[in-house]
Image 1 (cartoon, rainbow, N blue to C red):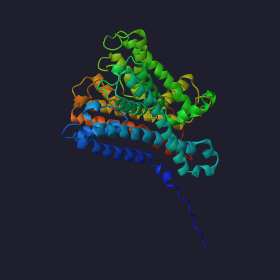
Image 2: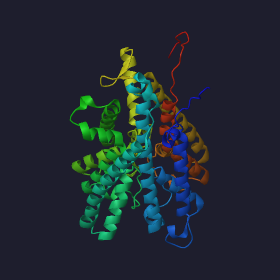
Image 3: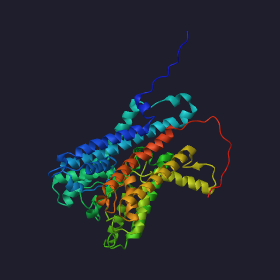
Image 4: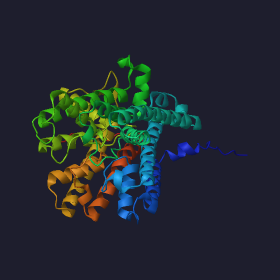
Length: 455
């Protein structure tokens, strides 16, 4: 009598995570479809009639993908119901991407960790329902607590400093807090944060929410446990913190140096207000989308700096977009190791595997390719200048939401292109990175090595 060997079935969660692209794309497509349907309802707009399908699709995608680009004024075009739908879509999109990214990080750490390589049994250990519940619970609590703190500060300021009625002050505080933490950039004000450019009680809490939300849950959780022991930080936390601080300094100094004497931006402000405005402006390209300066009035060098900051984006497993600071930071370490002639790439007394390096390179190069092709297409579809088109394209792909003011004037074809860019930019880097990591497999042989000429 022969006995057949049965392989234990893996839980549904683990089987699903074998194809991360399907999960992410499917979830976001459903959210966009539901949001489009809700924003198309007559009650979503205050006047007679309803929003046309393209307007509803554009804003549903922008909200779910936490981008912030808009073709209409959020505070006046949409009714209270429409604004509530946008707020819920922002929350769903931000929580969704943080939860999925955190779960993938947990799964990949088990799949690719040292224990999995040393102990064969650990390779079959899958993501359990308890793990999913724990990660989901922590992400939700972390998000809601952060948003509540910022909302209380903003609501108090709006009520006391601007004499807003208490119900509207609370509503505005909650809306801007959720939008800021999720790096969405939607505002109830037609001029975004320009009216608060010299008000630290509004600008700084929003900037803080943008930074915290953009760091990513795994990094924030590790910092909360061991912020006093930097030597024990993981490679992810070390790269995220170092690159984030560096980009904040570069963004702030870049805006201050370029715009200090610009009469249409920082020029009329006093020294203290200028530094405040420069810092907040330097934070927003981290894919937040709020603007405290008129982006149509900034200098070309400032637009170029903002393009670079937007493309890099924020931290992995956070609400920010872009290629992520971990991708950029890892490539910087690769470059540094190559310049020094080191055989390995080391970060904080840890050696980064070659697979991680190739994944970072793949994400960066494919993202550059998407932006390049989209910019070419946008140039063909519109009559705007190259600087404006490139800025809009990078902003959409990196889910930033900053604009030089051309979004509302884009023809329908260009608006659909922006919709596609926002969707690809939101799910693309995470889908690609996790998909590449899950496809890693051992090879039992190696081909002969041969060098080629580089450069």
